[in-house]
Length: 179
Image (cartoon, rainbow, N blue to C red; front, side):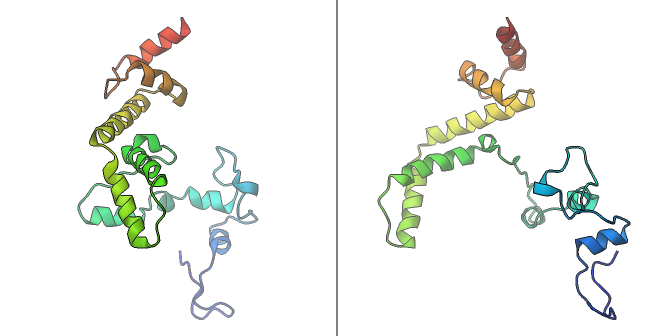
């Protein structure tokens, strides 16, 4: 399907057709651009133009520019799920550095600010970084074993010294909670 009007179009030669026109050409007419407040029903696939486009295979399988760049250089690009910074120990490390940065003196220019940021990053002890890594590994392990966010608090307290949770940790936890 052509996304642009032909050059001999009487009103908009060479212009982008837009979402509404493209979907009308596909047989989807009379739809809202989006559901009110972006609140589509959970299982709906064709309630509005936005949802129809969102569920198209070419949109779903589209790689981001960053992912294309990383993969073009021969690396694996692995993104963490949104809103799960506990899975990425670098986020926890960055949080510790930001805490130190808040206590640093005010800066007058960008060079001083960069120096402060680098100093704060260097001040986070390596032992803490390793602990952040272990903690993130515990979260990954717990999610893999089928835990919910509520379960994680209990498991974090119970298995403090373990990098990975024992395979039966979830079963043991659920037995002890229900007894």
